[in-house]
Image (cartoon, rainbow, N blue to C red; front, side):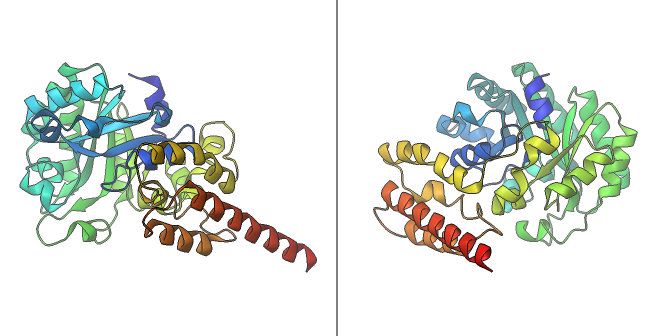
Length: 339
């Protein structure tokens, strides 16, 4: 067991396709030094058959960071796990919860909850391939399954395969009848069932996912005995609100610096990215919500969006925006003091 990722899993940011890329993770790491970050799901065939090893790249400053894999072929997942471990990932997570059409057609993700024997073979092969922590992310059930009956059986199988850490999205996945977007909201949350699973499997490290939109809500789950909480869209859309106090409230560390300091700390990273031929928007698209609820938030979002749509936007444009934002903040501060 890797103690760093185990400890960090007390609060994690969910793997989200097209969102949690390496730029997003670097940005989030500036806000919280301790939260566990996840890659977007990377498919085993893309690595093993397609040779897309660039998908494994990450910045050392992102640690602790975990790799999430998708797949259903034990041999491919074993090879992909070995590749991920060779790149320095200390945790490899198997996606058994994604309900997208693409995942269904590839026979992996949530649909695998209907094939426990395949899941067991995949997990065993992944563990044989590496000493990295092998973990699972799943739903409480799929389609017509009865979660109260099938979830404990599924968790028992996972535990018997040697996996000790599992994240449960506390909703069913309806693969027939609901879109991936609808699957994030329409199936009702069943937090009590996940709590029951923690009571039934005290030896498993269980994290809860789904519908957690604040750090206070995460703390409520932890206070009830759940081992960890995974936050998804809220951590992406309002990152400072979610992550700024994680280190001091959950890890006995220091709170994050002010949001404007985080924006300044991104300057060297942005500069390096642009020097290598990247575009400003590839980074700043993850930063729209940095000042959510703060003075100048709307101006920040609008101007970042404008810069993202402009060909040739450069570091000077970003720095100018920061100067403008600081001026707005100072003016608001002076106005408040004069009232």
